[in-house]
Length: 350
Ligand SMILES: *[C@@H]1O[C@H](CO)[C@@H](O)[C@H](O)[C@H]1NC(C)=O
Ligand SMILES: *[C@@H]1O[C@H](CO)[C@@H](O)[C@H](O)[C@H]1NC(C)=O
Ligand SMILES: *[C@@H]1O[C@H](CO)[C@@H](O)[C@H](O)[C@H]1NC(C)=O
Ligand SMILES: *[C@@H]1O[C@H](CO)[C@@H](O)[C@H](O)[C@H]1NC(C)=O
Ligand SMILES: *[C@@H]1O[C@H](CO)[C@@H](O)[C@H](O)[C@H]1NC(C)=O
Image 1 (spheres, rainbow, N blue to C red):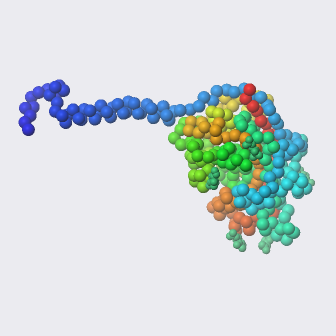
Image 2: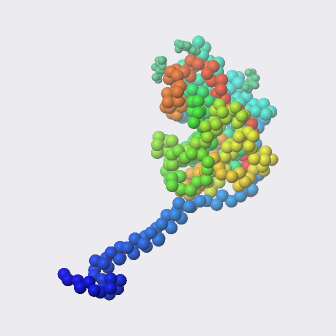
């Protein structure tokens, strides 16, 4: 091949096939960048419109009738814990649930030792209450004054439809295990098709796993952890605070407010989440249809012992002996294993 080399390179008229091919590739790359990049950026920026909703108080669980709003779950623990969940009469008799005008307490038994009859060698008495009413959306304000903690404990304040799990989803508002030194965990559990990976979220908490599907990561769910003082001893030392959970088609968001930082609109019973700033945990509907994954949920408060979660990380949590042995033989170790609640308020959008 000969090439005179005296034609101007910039005139396409003189280009050879190979040059045309290179130019074609360059144009294709530019087109891909110009089209694909904005699409990807737009995708990463998708975010629901959490516009202000007007909320009206629909229900309040409070005062000495607090526990009348709940059924006491008494079956075999679905989470394989080392507990015997007792019925209402026994819970009242053992003072495991107690409500006064201002406060409601739910605790683990601290009386049965290894010389008692019966002893706790097959599990310790505890309580799991599930609200009689079921919910499909709303704004839930939980006043939580004291969270349970201590080796072997696995407390949770959550929402689920136990008879249709995971089809109707699960929303964990407060959860921790053992000494609760990792802070509060806020988690969703669903059927397949609900994720929070690579999407825009507006929250102060730390994302844990990103797939909410119960068939992934041993049903760890998609969690967000709060600061280390959001559960346990440090949380309790300031009389706790408020957990607010907003559940609407656009997403599920949770806020934790310390006792001395409760927004005035919550105290005034006119809560407006749009005025609260960034949430602690944000689960937008970007890659998860909230409406189809979550429905018919009861509010559940319980204190499990050992089981699938506290038991499996028991040694890592710096706890002595093994979980079941410790729980069976050390009743007085559970003196901090109690929930203390103020009111639960449920608001509906109007
Ligand atoms: C039951 O528990 C509550 C809350 O801890 C306490 O104030 C009350 O004195 C207890 N009642 C009995 C009979 O022990
Ligand atoms: C709603 O949940 C309750 C409690 O799990 C269950 O008994 C009931 O069948 C559920 N209702 C529907 C319509 O799924
Ligand atoms: C997830 O849920 C399905 C029921 O839909 C159940 O069969 C399966 O055992 C669950 N997986 C885990 C790890 O809980
Ligand atoms: C727990 O420890 C006790 C006593 O050290 C032992 O007898 C028991 O087998 C242990 N249980 C498990 C599940 O490891
Ligand atoms: C009974 O419990 C005490 C602690 O409360 C413990 O020191 C003792 O070893 C236990 N006895 C048995 C047989 O496990």
